Structure formats: C-alpha cells, structure tokens
Image (cartoon, rainbow, N blue to C red; front, side, top):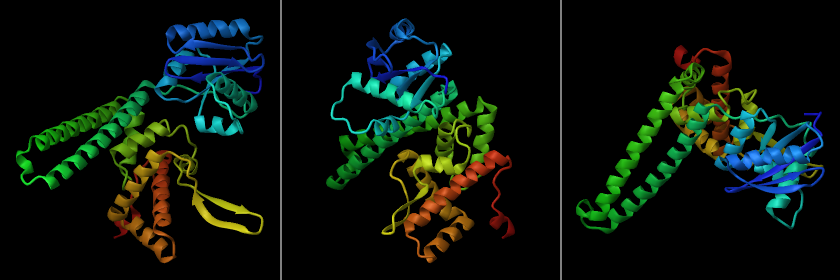
Length: 330
C-alpha cells in the first residue's frame, strides 16, 4: 500500500471505537455498532484531505469482527493486525488511554504501510467453525473442572453413588459430553457444505495423529491453507519453529522455539505428536533416534510436531493422501 496518504487508527473496545487520523491527529469516539460505523465513515470523509487511506485496528475477536464485516461490505481497505505486534512497535510508553492507543495504532499503520497487506473477512463457514471450536474448548474445560470436583467428592464420601452432589455432577458431565458431540457433528456438517474444505479435511485425516479438532484448527487458522505459503511459516506462527540465539563470540545458545505463538495450536500438535509416536512406526523410530542422538525429550517431541505439520502441508499441496511408506514396505 505504497500510495497511501493517511491512516485511520481505531482502538476497538466492547462498546466504543476511539478513532484518530494520523497526520491531522483529529480524534473522535463512536459507538461499536452499525450506527457508529456509519458515523465513522461520514466523519472520516469530512476530515480527510485524501481518498488514499486505510483503516488500521487490532484483532480483538468478536469486538472487531463486526467492524471488519462492515468495512468489507463497503469494499473499504483495512488492516486487522495482531495486538502484540502493534504493542511492540510503540516503544516505551508510560501513559495508556484509548485516545493514545488509537494514535499509536495509526502510527503503526503509517510506519509499516509498505509492508502491510489489506485484511479480508473469513467466509461465514470459517467464522462458524471458529466459534464452534472456541465453544468446544470452553465446554471441555468446564467438563474437566466438574470431573475434578466429582473425583474429590467421591474420595471424601463413603457412598458417593447415593450422594446428591455426585449425582448432579455426573448428570452435568454427561450433558456437557452430549453438547461436545453435538458441536463436533455440526463441524463435520459444515465441512461438507464446502467441497474444498471437505476434500482437504479428508486429506488431513490420512496423516497419523491428525484428528477432527486438529484438522479443523489447521483449516481455520490457515484459511484452508491459503494464508501460509509453507509449513515452516505456519510452524513459526504456532511457536514450534526453532530459532538461533547468538551474539558476538560469547553468547551461543542452542536453537529453541520462541515463547510467542498460538498456544492452542502448540498444545494440539503436542497431543498429535504423542499419539503419532504410538501409532506410526516411522515417527516412533524418528523420535527414538533423536533421543539416541542426545536430544532432550521435548526437543525430540518438537521435531515430531514439525514432521506432522510438514506432512499436513504436503498432502494438501500435492493432492494424494498420505501413505506411510514404512508401513507399506513392512
């Protein structure tokens, strides 16, 4: 976006939008709803001296989603950026207000205008898959908490099978389990509504260790493998790609993953790696070979996580399902 002449920075909160024009530093506050969006467009056109501009704001989940949909419906250019990247670009700041945040967002957009790419709203099926995955995670966490409480109750009581609290907990756990299954069924039905999604889902399921949830998460985060060019860039996004750490002649650390990354994807890939080591002879041999080389268990496991990502991207890019050559030869 090299032809840009101004940037509109927006700090999005639950109820309001704090808006600042970068060059003129004009500031205004609008409601985070349909009427507020229309008022924002009218105000922007009245105070901007150019038509070559774009909106810049942080990705704040559901709070910014409505704004993204509205701007896309009007074919207006906007950039929805990671809050962490914007925060790290601001430098040292002792004050924090919504007005200042909107200016710093506008400043970020202006500084990196040549590097930034316009954002797009995910299709409706992706949006629903994302909501279903988030709801399922919440229900699974709630169920785990109830199971832990039930276990404690059963340990304390002499006859837990007749205790009213235990019965209520068991019914609640059973109900949540049914809701989790219902969500998983809905996700499968959604995948069937899109031929490309369904095809890629079936390819992913041929990779050992990749189940329904990891497949849906991969499809969602990669926008059906259109957002990332290769598995290495997605590995970096997840926080499992090893990076060098050295400085001068004295600091020489081993390569290690950065702590910044998608924690949910990292956890799912860890679970997939543990499962794959048990069910895939090739990955099992690979894992133990790394251990014999003196690698730490977590480093060897991280290597398996990257192997699974590499296989997943390979089957999508090349087309045919994954075939375990070692198993075929055996």
